[in-house]
Length: 409
Image 1 (cartoon, rainbow, N blue to C red):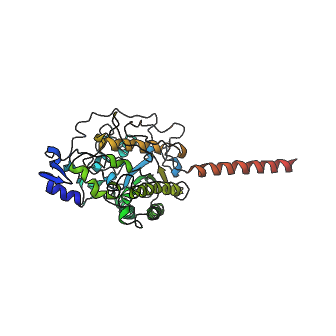
Image 2: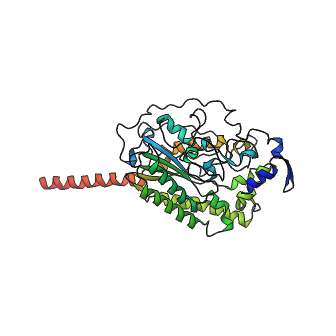
Image 3: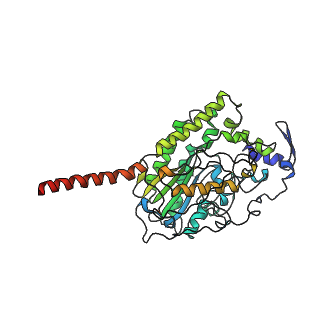
């Protein structure tokens, strides 16, 4: 709640915070609260692929789902998925959730207006259900007509994500035009970074063990209750570089309130080293959980999408941070950051497990790929599961053939 309090008290007047004198975000507070990112942008060039058609019949196996077969898109997570402040450059935008431009679910305009995963899927299926149509206000009640199927909640930790899933399942079952049992669904989940931000406040509640427990519980819930679903679990990023995103504004100083465990420790301190180790352990344990067939069956799959795992922060040619990627709080992404995430996720969906590309740095734009001609389906089956049945079948055929031939002779 601190950002909202400071917004009310300081946004339109001179403030002193931690020794800095600030005048309404440096005289910019009279700008349009909706931001100018989309208004100032030129259209993206069209994106076309050789094959953008659905399967001849609705697939029954999760291994053979093309992009155009997907009828429903949804998202789970925290403020990165609610896209808080994403379409604004001043502190006035921070209380607003710009869900319509969120990387995984935003439905503003078309792909040429803003690149989101939903807008890419809309090129393959213009009747896609679920893209978020508009912005919401943090902390205020919302309806599905405002959020679309973006069930993320700003501030949520992993321990809260099962509540989001329950809301999603109930919505799917009753939403007009959605066939709960027949429609193929893509759900994207990115959660856990608030756990790291809060780790020093409760090292048991926000431990790697707790993180994996709640992730397992959440994924089991979806596997047991959601038919015909592909779940993208996006690997959390390395958060330490965010400490370097700084400028002497009220927005940047708010970092200390909502991610104090990361921002407040001194450089090279034991506290910071512990947090960096915890961040790595979250990544390692999530990879360990999902690199198996634990969450795979005929009409359901969970896939770890690792494009963020080693992503470096955006930098200018002189090596300093490119602050145009960040909102006024110096922590969340603006639209251009969301677009790179959307492209990274889309590409990972059409790359096999051992060939998924990582974003090296947000400074280098991701080039969007088309589904490969030789495998036009979303990759869902774990590698070791894919190869084992083929090996078994060929071995069995060989031995049976030898046996039959021997007896004939």
